[in-house]
Image (cartoon, rainbow, N blue to C red; front, side, top):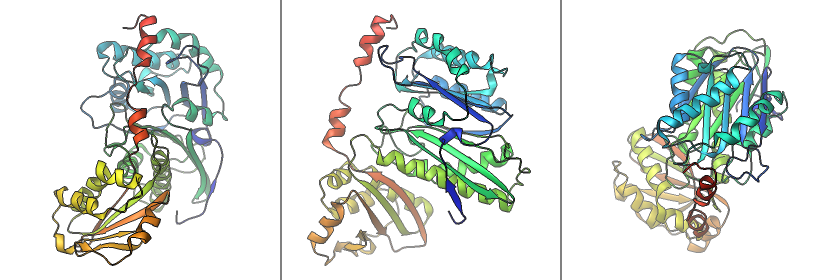
Length: 417
């Protein structure tokens, strides 16, 4: 960011006025003790905003949270891992509502003030028999120092929990911004597959928060891809409770712009963390497209390159194969001229004017052997640019995703299928 900030501990629990908790229900495995049900609660009324999957197949919690946000602002979020509650029909809606009701009553809130999110296996009914005995513990354990537990409770194929919290000045007041995210597979723009929850004690009106969240998601979570797949459960929810004591931010004022900058930075850091923790990935690759005629052309090129299985496979093998990159540029449907395309790998020219550059191949191989590197594609046709963050595609990714249905055996024992 362009102004001073400090990293602080606590993730979504770091901002003032937020309480969090997480418990183990054994949702996916009754013998497991890992955390899999989480709650975020603001002691004060909140402004809120959410962005959700654009997949036409939407999970029940997505539909319920969208409906609640249309009615007004949220004040709490309940989330689980282990079961997506997706493609579960009317019963899934009933279960999502039941999760909201279970925390709304003891917190003295309306059902519509609760956001709900789920992640895990698609197509199985929720094992509500595992949730119900744990709701009291979830409420009783609410506290100001459990943010990291929330981050741990929402992960699935992630190798570790991912969270960030910062403090910074907005005018004369010190404010806090904290977030956590889960996601490792089924990651693709519009939106990337994940659950992300962000809290702040800044005083941001609902209309300003909604605008900021939409813009910042476009510049962060919609700029990443791992495998090109989009899920049914993608959810980003942001809560702002004003507990810092600062006056309300004026729309489009200096404080609003500073808050948006901080939110964008936080979301982008979380988005990059998702890519770095992608399922069995070994490379983090930044792809910058510049010199495009339009923003849309630049975006088309970046997405085509970042989603190409051939390109991603070459990255995994440490092969600086610019031919695969330019072929993806060509089929991106952007307006390009082959003889104008330049491609740079780690700052070294790999392709100039659509032809092999003079850079020794060994130098390029050394660059792509690194765990992180940058590719710049200059279309030399205009001033528009676009940046995306991607990964390689490994044989281990295929092996990891060959089967997900061991959970169905447990579901049969529970009488769910």
